[in-house]
Each structure stands twice: as structure tokens, then as C-alpha cells.
Length: 426
Image (spheres, rainbow, N blue to C red):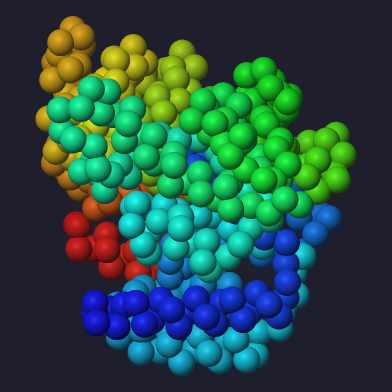
């Protein structure tokens, strides 16, 4: 889409989306945070699906994705050619789509302090009555780096404060009859308790108003520490909708399934076990995934870690912090991408991790070749995790699956659009 038409098309889609919402008048629940938003969408859906008709913004959290989702369709891609059919089809959807739903559950992705990729712009499309603020991490921090002078003391903290301020606009925008659901374990999130006109419900995975640790048991699923946070946030929604906590917990246990690429257990070649967390990565979830890997004490453990992208000036520190954990939890470490090679691998050597057990590779196809020919002997547990931008670690998962014919059912980023992206890499 050429820049000349960018804003007119955004305004056009926003106008149509607002008209569509005026037809259905759903209760809008907005979710924001730095990590775990999609898993939270799944958890909230699990709680509500038996009681309400719900529309969910899966794979649609942006200035274009949200209005198109509201109108009822998802493009194959956003190429110039695609926009020639998106524009007229959007109007057609407005005219013919009269599907009713009680609740619109929407993920709000904030990648920048500037419109249209900021919270302020997204809130011109939708006006949530309930807002869930999950957490704040220095993820997608690169666009904020220039707002804090280079030599500022505690620059990382100040950049993270700016991210919190932007995401927190969801909470400050809520109406007086709404609910703000805030993570009491995150001090930056909890500050918005005094900045909203809405009623406040707090949750805590550790000790707060909704503590579900050791209570969730879901067959064939495993969860790192941040899932306690996810489940707590989802259950905190229950009182806002006058739902009994006990029945909400039962619904969560009955209906919740992890999205593809978020710590799914998959049988691998040579009797290996794959922990597929290939969808995306930032420091906190990556450390959580590594701690989960560490629980597989009977098997040799392989950590396949891709770059954590869009961290800006914090990339070095964030990768080095991950190195401290992976050095204690994995027997063999495979890194993919320049950031892992530049920052994590040297830190491993400083931590006295055996050099012979570190493989620093440039891309995913190289990793597949080395894992199959040199590393995997049999019965290992293999964690695969990294950012999605240009890495496509699901390629590794498919290559190591015992039943690769199940890839479209089990793995993330499926379809012709993503197939084309992966083919370009390989």
C-alpha cells in the first residue's frame, strides 16, 4: 500500500468498522500487554464461550487488522494488489454482515508511540468498556529509544515507562461504568489503578485477588510461569461480568487450548519430545520456557533459541539475561540469528558453558541440517523458541516432527501467505 493512500484507507476502514459496531452494539473487552495477549484471548474465550456469543480478534490487533476483523474478513496479505479487492469488499461486508454477538474481545497491539501503531489511534476505532492490562516488558522498544537520551541513567526503565504509558491509555480511556483489570504483580500496570474512572479489579499470579496456582489441570498441555498470570487475568474478568468464579474455573479447564507455537508438546523424530514455542519471544516468556524445559530432568535437553527482535538498545542486556538461565537449563544450545550470536553466545562462554555444546547459526535451514546430522541422538527434549520476524522457527519444528503431516493442524503461521515467506527463506 503506497504512502499516498495509507491514511485515507485507514480512515475509510475505521469509518466502516465503527458503523459495523453500531449495528451490533457488543460489549467490547480490550486486552493489552507486552506478552501473553493471544494466550489470554484463548483463556477468556474458554471462560465465556458457553455463556455468550463472542467475536474475537484473532490474528488482528493492528490499525488495519482490527477494522477488517470487525467487518468480518481477513486478507491473505496486505500487498498492493490485495488492497484493490479489500477496499470494495469492506463496503460489501458492511452491507451484508448482520451477524450478532454479545461480546467483542479484541487484542490491542501497540508497536509505536506514534499513530497509527499506537494505542491512541486504536482507541479511535473501538471504545472498550472493560480493559485488561496484562504486563509491561521492554518489547517493541526500538521506536521508543529516541525519546530517552542515550546517556540517561536507567534508560531501560524509562523506555519501559513510556511503553507502559502508551499501553495504559486503554485503562485511562475506560468509562465510569466499565472495569479496569490490572496485574498487581507488575508495578507499572498497577499504577493505573489511580488513573482510571472505571471500577478496578486486580489479579495476581502470586498472592492477589485471583490466585489459581496449582489449580489448573489441563490434559496434554504444559505451562511456563506466565500462564499463571494469563489464567489469573482471565478469571479476574468473571466478577466484571457477574460470573461465579467456580464455574469460570470449570469452563477454563474444559475449554482452554494453547494456540499453536506456544509451548505445545509434539512428538519428534528418534523418540524426541519437542516443546514448540516458535510463535514469538521476549525475555520473560523465554526464561519461563527454559524453566519448563528444565523440568524434563530425565532427558538430555536441547534449547534452540532464535533472536529476540525489536528490542532496540536493550537487545544486548535482554539476550545476556537469557544466557544466564539457558546455561543452567540446557545441555546443548543452538542459537539462530545475529543477536543471539553477538550477545548470548559470548555470555555463555563467560559463564563457563562448554564451547563444544554451543552452535551459533545464521538461519533456520542451517539449524535443521545441524540438528539432524550432528546433535540429535535420540530421546532428547527440544525447546524451540524465538521471534517471528524472518526466522520462522516453525520450519525446524516441522522438520523434527515424528508426523510432519500434522503440521497444518499443530504449527503456527499456516496458509499460502506464510508458505511463500518460508519458501523465500529456504
